[in-house]
Length: 261
Ligand code: F6R
Image (cartoon, helix red, strand yellow):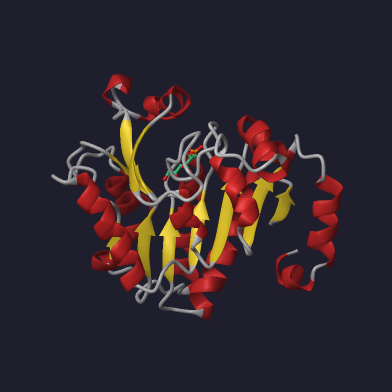
């Protein structure tokens, strides 16, 4: 795992966007694993700007999102499908037929999850998986005690996650209490992982995820097992990390990061 600490949220978001852009330029037919949430809104705005101003070309990309609420019709404004259409897919030249999210209102959810995993495999697996982190330590919606070997499946959301996301619904009580999510095992199969976390409210959970023991109580700790995982945080989210000086030193000295400093 590599940890990169940027002074501001804006700079952290820009760095994450530049790494995604570099992946797409290196391999135009990349399969991207995408996340939703407040943290990603700014990042998608930067990617849309890179498409508009610098010709960043999504035309050959495929995408698979991490998760989707169960029980909402696909065109409900609160689905993650609607979020992705609004924040990214409508703003870049990705072919909408190449964008995938699990269908949270499928009649047979187990079958839907199995088919979602198969579609990912048919596309050659995820080249770059983008992740946020919830205050419960979840990645995707892998709430505490999710098996570190789990695959795409239905999960009940924890009260912490419901408190985190319900305010985004016009009527908070309408927030679904379950979601389909890629599993921790699914996520760990991505060839590269990029986590972005910003703001003081993420400082405790980032310290646990990066420096704590690996435990299914904090699914993000499983990222410590991944051979190529980069965690980008701003100063506020890095506040509780013990090894800050060391992480800065690596970023300054590792040739891989020369173009990004
Ligand atoms: C959503 C997802 C979640 C979010 C996490 C952080 O697709 O994967 O794990 O990344 O809940 O959400 P925000 O950015 O709203 O704090």
